[in-house]
Image (cartoon, rainbow, N blue to C red; front, side):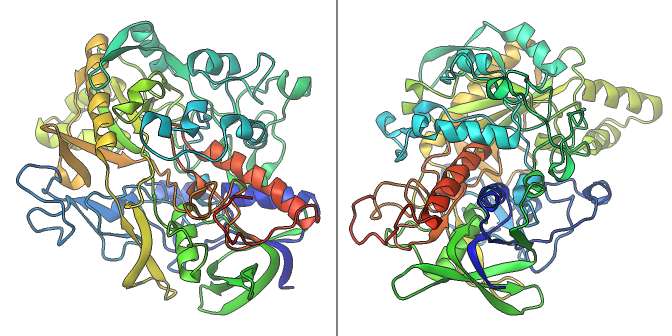
Length: 621
């Protein structure tokens, strides 16, 4: 059969949720996944991988390559240094970008600074290897234009709030609504209860709360003071079910393959990225385990083009198997849910939806500034999720006029993201200090027990210059143009990083911590720049967004509020690529809420309740 009601391209979070909802209504859904749907236990693959990176739990296939953080290498050049330029060129030449990438990398880059995030192309997508953090966006985040930057959403927090509730139910979120209301400013009603009670704070969280709650630090960019408070972060991972959820009906956690698992809770394996051995963390595979029989998954199928008829209506897709065999499938509705970068690449390959000229543009991420050090006493890192709590006071308010807002995650995994695995500490003490035997063991133990990291996730606003395009010459193993990334950080983000570093300095002083932050060696920090006479380094959070923006006019956006492509009835581009801003919260929950909202609209369209036509003018429908 090659005729369906709906074809979904990509089996990640958004694609799996949409297929689930439509299958529940009896729709015939074909899900085409570029990656492999392996039944192999990912744990042995992860344990034997030489580098513990996000994709290390899966065996890559040349048919669907993906970008890894190891593709990038820093050079001695630092963009922003006086007397140099940041014009893209040969990475080893003076005055060029401070990074280079592997010639075989899936993403090729030519921007002043690197897009420093990766993703995976396997069944379940990057939703298999995410952190599991699931906070909502703040109401203020939906319109940053009033603060003088960014783009306004064509819908509000209140418009999305019912879908947020659905997403929290589908993902099984653990959190405390009262805490989110009081300390984050989210307008939860008094009777709202998350599916599960909050994940307990780590010992590090409690140490920092004891030393910092109620203390104040100065924002040197906005010139105001902010009170510190350790606040629990919502998690899409199994905790203790809350009997108050859903009007007192409660919630039953799900485990591997979506099966009910009341006792399948987080037990602190500390390998959430890339694999949770207890299956407490939500992944799209849990949703797939609940698909109806009318949903079919076909893996190792790379979609190469969206098919449209003479009126512009989407009619199906062309796809290619790993052996090079081409095929087509047809449907009344086509949903692109293949990741912000891959969605943009597919639209560009198809020559569709670009009346506004915005396809592939406005690429965003959360550039992450890391600071790390040693506390006076042991805090027991490497237990539990990567972060269980954070500081929320820098996310909102008038200060964002002057600098990018940010969330501060408290890192539970020592210095692993900043400097690499514990082996790095052993090597430093062995070769740098000449320690051996008992002295080496004692020194390693003392250092690791006191390690902690602060992770400042910066909002990056939509900038058309940051973009995904098709490489003019480089092809992937299936003969398709590789994505070409042009990326940079503007002064608003850099000012945010300057403020974050100053806040970090004050926090370290209040804690009596020894600051070990050092953005070297250069090879380990591709994302380095100089701002205000100080060198900064950043990592990518893996939160790609903004490549097919949502808006209220086809002249300035790619999709409408339902993530329907303006120019092509029956074609939806869903996921973080539709988000006009990425704010400061991890975007997965918002992406899931948008996907569920789109599924509702697609079902209404299929049932005949809505007639959709291409929009010939600049007016919204």
